[in-house]
Each structure stands twice: as structure tokens, then as C-alpha cells.
Image 1 (cartoon, rainbow, N blue to C red):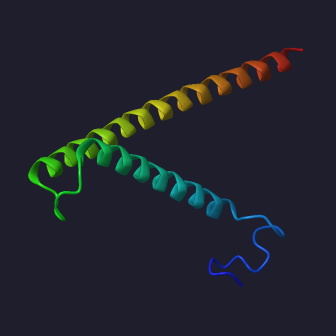
Image 2: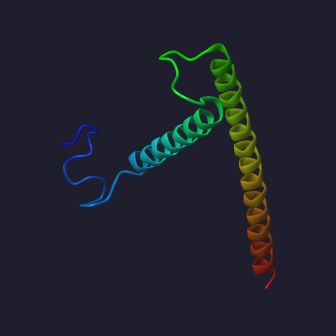
Length: 106
């Protein structure tokens, strides 16, 4: 039996993952990618050279602002994407309802 209580064969047979486990893996990969991109971008922007073992005040301030702006931008993009997806889903539901109504008239 696996650590997730899914048995040796996984979900529904060999080679298939449980949908929740698959979604969790995708989410973890996305979070890791986000962190790595943010760290690379802010490091490149804020840390010029390795002069000291500790960050100086300017580097800390720059890094704080960079991370804050990155996360704010990421949130705004995520909110807009969610809004767009909801609008598309509503359009699809309206289309399906219209098709069902047209089918019922025949």
C-alpha cells in the first residue's frame, strides 16, 4: 500500500494517478516555478555582486519591493484569468441551454 492509501496499483489500475494527487503535483510544480522565476528575477535586479555574506540595506529594500511587486502582479493576472474563465464558462452554459431549448422545439 502506498503512503497515500491508494494501494500499490494507484487509482483505477497501473500507471494512473489519483486525480487529487495529480492536481497537487501540478500545483506544487507551479509554485516551485513561480518561486524560482521570482528569485532569479529579483536576485538579478537587486544583488549586484557578492561583496558581503549579508545583504545590505539597499539590497534588502530592493528585494522586498521586487518580491512584493512580483506577487501583486501574479495575483492580478490570476484574478483576471479566473474572471475570464468564469465568463467563458457562463457563455458555454448559455450556449448549452439555447441548444437544449432549440432541441425541445423540434
